[in-house]
Length: 491
Image (cartoon, rainbow, N blue to C red):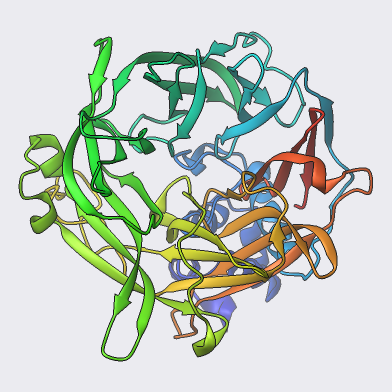
């Protein structure tokens, strides 16, 4: 019967199928098997897949420009990774593809999606540079490094409007002087065929708001503004914003929205999407029976950002309260404020933030889900007021037995659905993968899973000082205390 369905109808069906369901159609009959040699089949299948997870290509890359072999390779890589990561102990597909000795203590601060580009920060010389993670070396012709002139205190998620074939990230650097001044760097990496071809940057002074008693954190930026959070003497947390500079030598953050009081030091973070600004903050939601942990999300519209009129921001913006849903069931109790947060490359894959907390016996990963709202996708129909994101799903908490070996090496992948870190649990030290699985259209609820990734015997996980998981390539990158750089391949 399938053989009698017109090809255009088959293509319409394919657009509604997961990649793992679309590819087996090729084996059902000779007629459909012929679609394996049709680029349209792979383009439609991959376009559907890339709305939910990262693929082995840049997120804005036009799939129609790829050869048939390239499209098939992207699909095969995605299917291999999904099968491997679904097992309790995902296996290395091949031995470490890269093992390189770095000249000094170094950490990974950014991973450019769908490319071979990592952004590294040398802790001794305090320089930032591009690194070819596939070849384990500097990119030819791109050997220069950017001096930070201080200590990096915050790294933003990529800007969501800086163009195709390039990606921009912002760094906040605190000086070593007694005055503790700040400087913001915006670094733009341009790439071709997955390789970095240029790294441009500009920097400017960034003064914290006059009322801020501490530094500024949770850095973000887009085409219009740079922003952060700051704290005043009364423990109020503020959304602080400055216009994104063009040629100005300095910007001054101004406290524009009083987000909340924070005597309990609950975790809060900012992110931006399509020019809109969001703040996510842990909170306890009280009812007549008990206190339920949750997250409060504040939305500041793009129209408000561009107008600079924030007087009524808190009252006029949408407030979302998202309750928790733990795999531990009703007996699960909130352990207290988290120790850190992580952000995905972009929230459109279905996760906007991850909060990580610890108890005496567990590490808790709280995934904050989101969804694309029923708002126009194009600029002509987007009035800049309606939020392009909705928050209809409960938080999902994964509780992993054990303790963090190093609290600074938790990494969330591009989609936000996979987190990697090193945990010492009941069975020893393991490179641990924690996964969020969204609910299905048929009504199956979201769930989480925990996995111990296979690691070569010569890697001492207690010596790992930097970790990066890349779901687009199916790799995990590790840097040891001694400066050994490893790439582990699971796809």
